[in-house]
Length: 407
Ligand SMILES: *[C@@H]1O[C@H](CO)[C@@H](O)[C@H](O)[C@H]1NC(C)=O
Ligand SMILES: *[C@@H]1O[C@H](CO)[C@@H](O)[C@H](O)[C@H]1NC(C)=O
Ligand SMILES: *[C@@H]1O[C@H](CO)[C@@H](O)[C@H](O)[C@H]1NC(C)=O
Ligand SMILES: [Ca+2]
Figure 1 (cartoon, rainbow, N blue to C red):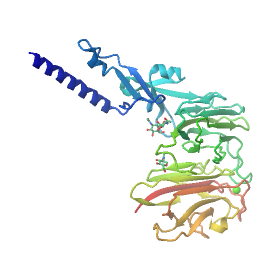
Figure 2 (figure 1 turned 180 degrees about the horizontal axis):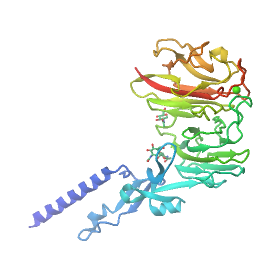
Figure 3 (figure 1 turned 90 degrees about the horizontal axis):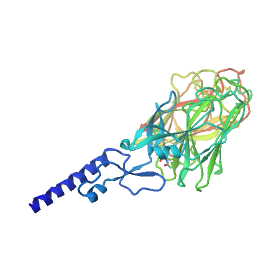
Figure 4 (figure 1 turned 30 degrees about the vertical axis):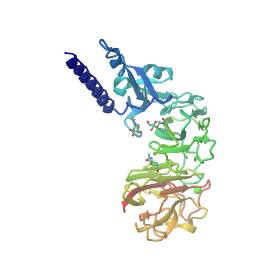
């Protein structure tokens, strides 16, 4: 009698232990790790109150889940994904932090907590906060400047990723460079790291920016909008993700944008896939590509099915290297027409209104087989000289389709 009762109890413990294990494996939101003060939540699980042996059941009475990203129920009409991202908290943590619950997470123990800020002057302290214009999804028709401050959500944040889910402010009014690509409205990112972030304007939905926010716990960033006149189309929604210094998805130093997909489309800011957009002035940044395993080169070509996808000035041919001195240009170090790392670099700067084929009015793909894999965009603030008369299709900027090439 004694023995069989004992083994029954043992079996019960085994069942409970196994049960506990599978449920903690079923969802990524659970963690066996010790709760870190800031990014995990520990709550008492009210189920399974021990009737016969409180000790056994108390093993399973604490639920710990990480405050990871979650998919909320709030839908996005444009931008990176169909739903806004939130952070998994308990419902009381969520309301204490100023968020709003939108769906569940952590197997129902948490709520997907959405953070949205729109009033000027607000300080953002939560990862994955959406910044939107006052009156969103309506337009912002006032001309009062707007500023937001972003503080680190934890001390080990080094980068911010800004995703422009919607972004439409006034851009250059002409599509030639007669004003050198001057921005009437402006969006500016300021940090104290000295990483240059170009001022941008116009239409930038779908674009993103990484910015180095600094390594000190107290470092912060400021996002500011200034406006030049009334507008019936001015609207923005920016997702601000805080990226840890050690996060493998941080960009390499000096990269304002980065991609790791096998193919992708890189465009200059305010490049509309219609004929009337204009290049912006004083751009000076790099878009970087991370090669996947088994890939050795990146091939670039002007965007397919986009008219005049490479137009930096009114020269009616492609130009390279020293021909681009004191003009707006694209820099791809180590570029060659052939995808083979043994071929020496042919050209690195490209300008004019055709890509990759100097002296002709024909676009040609170029290939880069030497790290780092990046495209640098550089524009000045003066109308670039050219042979032809001002033409509305010139100086639209650059749209490049890239493709990683296997080794
Ligand atoms: C912020 O959220 C993203 C997406 O969920 C996550 O990858 C990142 O680690 C988070 N950052 C911090 C500091 O927790
Ligand atoms: C957050 O959003 C991105 C797209 O912007 C998506 O790829 C990612 O899976 C989302 N993360 C979570 C945890 O839902
Ligand atoms: C950015 O670059 C890093 C490292 O080069 C890479 O691991 C990461 O996946 C990239 N991020 C995105 C969103 O592509
Ligand atoms: Ca120029």
